[in-house]
Image (cartoon, rainbow, N blue to C red):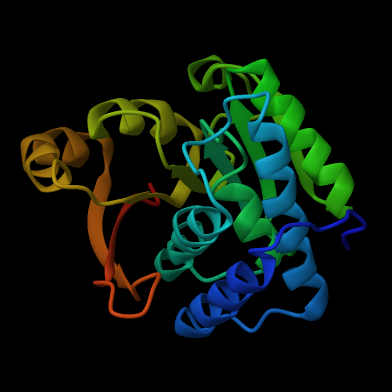
Length: 232
């Protein structure tokens, strides 16, 4: 899968954290997948010296808050061949690329409006030799009027795009009937959800709160919100 080099004195600590976290999440990664994450981590740090990709300043932060936090999204859906997902505002490829590494059967579109981030994601895809994934340099709202994207995706992810109403407005037109928008819950999620209930009903979407294991030993469970589009 991956051919890049991995460097850094903290690499073994980060690798150990990753293996522990994957075990807690119930993910059995192959040696090739573990190596892919190591290459991804190393490239994130190398590019961060020149390009603003994420706020992660250490290998451990990349593993905990980047990779493992992204992989908690799997608690909100069942990976299967034929699933197609869109990652809105993907940034450095999270959560989309982390999920793609562990679940290669999922088709993935990564969308970001910042060219340098798209350049990085394309670089990582080449480095890891990933298939069934592509990057698009665009604003998510521009996809809504295109037949290639409108109503096509079984899953939509949005990690750091904006407030809940904005995320729903961006993602809902892209979802196929029965598709799910998955986001991580924050302190503002519950009041935003309550305020949007009538609007979600009008859109034909129902809200499901999903709990995933914590990303680290002793950390609290991760709360996810899945907004499911009706089949009509």
